[in-house]
Image (cartoon, rainbow, N blue to C red; front, side, top):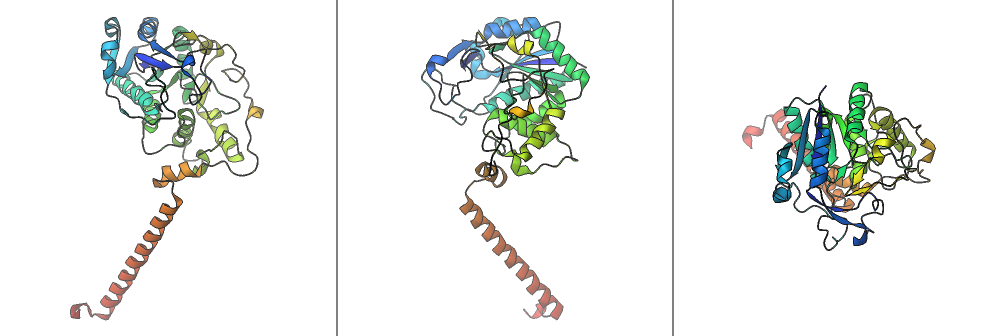
Length: 344
């Protein structure tokens, strides 16, 4: 077993801090945001990881090359990547002075993670953990928990915590897993044509179940496309499988050591569940009444668009085409059976 560390993200990082996160991107004002220079954090993480992890790689963007401290380039392998989504989708109008805030950066995050994973795999690494450039934490404790997680080999991925009321929302502050599984989920997360949810935390959960539930487990595909954060009977079955087989939470101590953009995360963690704590199934937000399926997203992901009218037109056109082909086949067969083709 060989453990690798990926530090991914931009050098100048805009957004919430450890004390202001949780207010929601669509409602946040600039008073909650900072522009954070990640150079010191990256350097400290590398220094603390040396002697523990077998390989360390920083996965960032070519456009940030001039912003990167030259001292860091001497400490670890630096991947300078082209931005895979120079015009990512927006969830709100960007705020002045915070140019990267308000975008959906799922593909950016998992592309930079994937490239880091590929590098580590080429170096013989078997298990990897990814951190953000703008976050620091107790690296030695992280190493011990990832090493134990890899040895136990009972679940597939390691995440900071589980949210008891909505366990289908997976935090991506730090993630870990066996290289081959981590590569597979990262490739799925950067697929621009298929997603279960527009939110990265929900999409990550459902894609993990879709990929790693095994051929002997059967879930209805429509139940992966949730509309509200409420549990139906079908969704509870998916959650039970994921919590028992796929997702492992880290310790509370590890999470509380986290600094995000220069500030410690909040100590109030009553909405989170950590390793060694009993799962609180009774805290699920439950659905009352009708189903909880986002049919628009389901149609867009499965047939390429969410217009029922356009879909109906395509189905009708296809059926007429199918009938015509069958008719031509029958006529051709009849002509051949009567032996009159040579006279036509």
